Amino acid sequence: MNAPYFSGSQRSDSELRLVNNRTLPLPANDLTWSLSLPEGADRDHVYCNPTAAEAVYGDKIGRLPACFINGYGGDPLVDKQKELAKILETRGVRVEKCFVEDGYHAVEIYDEAKALALGQYIKNFVLSLTSQSSI
Image (cartoon, rainbow, N blue to C red; front, side, top):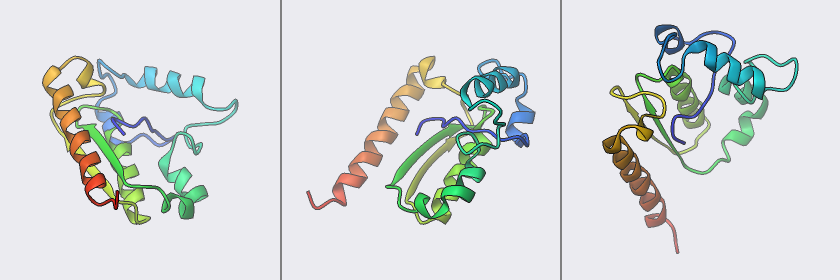
């Protein structure tokens, strides 16, 4: 998952710190969720908040395959991305994390070096899975 998109009703430190982020300002994030969630749902819905999803799907979460999670310190969503990684690890899922301070949400669109680095991280992750396979 590259910069997975999660939130919650309670603002995370990264959302508060980056409220006026140029790439993903808080009002745009709120609008995205208001248009995406079922009518009447808030940001604590299982589609939006990984903590809410864990409460509902906890045992099933542990059955997920290995995951790669990439995020950046300049992304308002980075705290929720780290929270997701922790939930997955707590449930026994193998999680390969790559959190880099230097970057922001969707930086790979604008920065070729970040795009190439992400491609290499993903390649290494996939190769690590195939090397463990009996194929």
